[in-house]
Length: 134
Image (cartoon, rainbow, N blue to C red; front, side, top):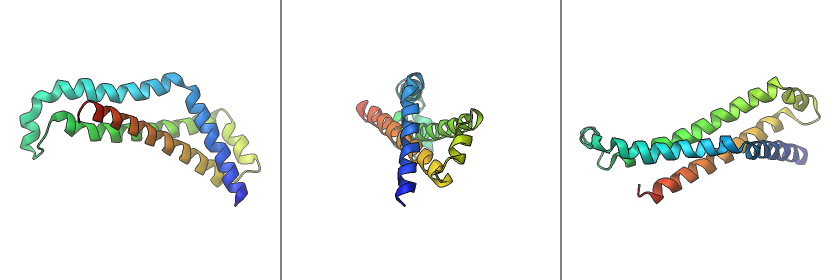
């Protein structure tokens, strides 16, 4: 069991380091949802009567913010899957699967890192939404 945990930890840190290296990707993935909430949320605030006709009492930005937070987590997870495809294409996956670490450690490490990144990004977007009064 210790070997599985250590191997998972190793893959987990590899994914986090790789994510941290991609500063432009991190910046884009944080700026895009913030723009959705701040700019588009305020732009469509004139659709208030339409939103109230479906039974939602509140501002449009309050209607939109939960969806943006969920989309942030989903997009982060999708990009994590794409990174797994890149690993496969450039040979890391072959090296990892032929090494003495278990296959489940590779999957668990990648999933754990992607889940942590998605949760952190969603928390930051939630913080932005709360800061602007949602």
